[in-house]
Image 1 (cartoon, one colour):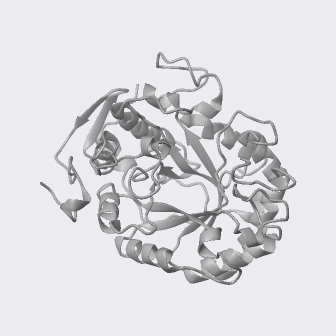
Image 2: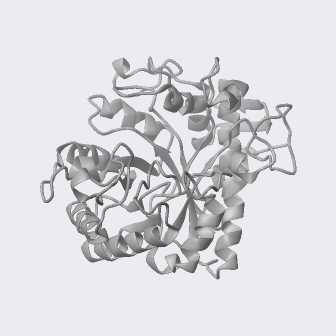
Length: 397
């Protein structure tokens, strides 16, 4: 059972503005949201919503191929506008960066998939330019997330943890030279039990090879990605509290998978670095979406409670530096997919799902979680149940 008393919640979940360089801390993890802000004409209400949730960090994915489509030709406009919009809010920005442009790919690359450059120095040069442009305005960089999947690391010589660490090394040097205050987070890996070495490498195996290649020298924190599938936040392969039988038995199917990754860190003498959960979420759909049948097992209300439980679980770990929830608004705007929408905290029509409302109340210390399916508000808080960008800035009803 998960129980959060009001007095404890007020201490544990109070936001803090600054996070030092990736060492263990007695502070609670920073709270972040993965958001889709690039090119958004409605960025103001999105940022208002993040502020209502007392968000410390905003995570935005950018692709190298879009920012430098031709060598030396930078297209900063949309990202400039996004960074400028976030800055006055006091929230910090994490940029997740991947995706080499075609001009930088090795001969023979499958350019229908993302992949690394032929010359890692080209990526380092780009990261140096990016970090120099946003020095003091971007707080952290997640370098090439999910490199353990072929769809993100399609290279003629295949998946390579050792190649990734060399890419990270060169990028890290360039970022530090351009902005010494920026945090460097290794790309969180996709939690997958698959380990064929061609389409995927199990993330725990991949992390071990990263450490063998010396990753600890080049990072401020280790990035980890987790997915709850149809399992509550406190469940594990050894302990199930739900009746569903699919997506069980392997740690990759549980939010607590990050604990397995921490064991790799400790075994490799890297207990001093923090672990950042750069993406964590639960999908919920009323009907089955092919390929993600687990989402139909999770109601919107369960999604909300599981997310709150995840924060409670992570905050108990002194080595967790930040938790970024996936996702706030991937359900809206051009290019929205059913897969991403299932994880969103708002619906395609911009109405609030329970996840938005419950997390906002929790972050404002106005919610008690009485059990795995029970919540009780303590006070009225600054949340609009029927929130929509047409309402303009968020205000109390």
